[in-house]
Length: 401
Image (cartoon, rainbow, N blue to C red; front, side):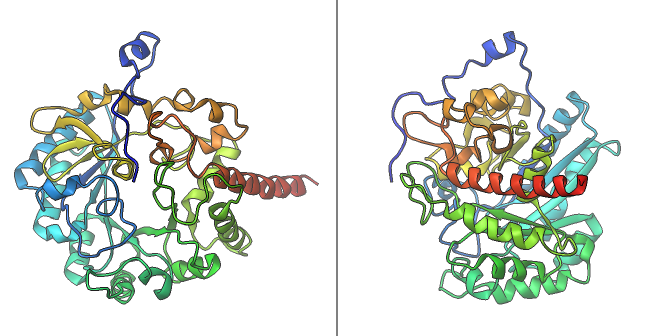
């Protein structure tokens, strides 16, 4: 695996003072991710946390301490009140967050809500692999008003291809059981998160997911970059295997007589094709407004960057001594709020740059030039966006006749 060079790479060369002098101002954080547990009860072979470049999890506490939770809540409140925010999202993440136990989960949610006060809405979400969902956790989530996102990669064969226990056992049956328990509380299910494997049939995968009645489905491209390409992607070739896979799902979703669920990637692309702004980091040019607090209190960038190189998500800041505004001043954070200014020359010349937005930031890394590159999925994204544009345009044209 190739690593980064010893010299400065973009965005480390970005001059934030010059940006401010030119009138740029950072967007305050509105999504706060607390890594309440740094270990997992599954051994998914594609996991960016444990199987890719950054192995920082090995030196971190397994569980976030109550003191770090309380300090994080206070820092969040300071940030919210400084910037006059009226609503934020609190995501409990891991590892596997349910390993932290119900007491710590309760503390995290209640501490943040108490700190920000009744005038600020806190939408709380827990993102889980689903294995540990039981009646006790469901009652807790219902009491606290916590939504639940569950990772599921399709049917049993597709899911168990990667999402296995350490001894090799698949986890699909346990996840299914957790989702069936959740079905009695449909208001709690936020959606399903599914990582694409090209060996899984796209229509079969989609239909397995919607069988649980999720309000939303989020398809994730496997994390990779120009140094460590994703599976089955030939970076020097002309094929678009991921674009083709997603197009098959799109056509199945788009042609359904009734809308079965919201597919976030497709909805975002359609919104931007119609002139709207993106609401996800996967595509578009909207500024990133999320920040991570690790189990040890370290303040970090989005953790998908851990797929690029050791320390890629780090900031050197800590919740005990630094506030979140300090993170907003870092070149690495500013770069993800600059929109088109943060795109490579190749992306700036592209006709779909406003919709694609260069793709997910973590997927742009190349040793030497850092993140100032197109996504390693560039061709796939172009193909998908062009296909969706064609389908939507045809429908709009037909509707005007």
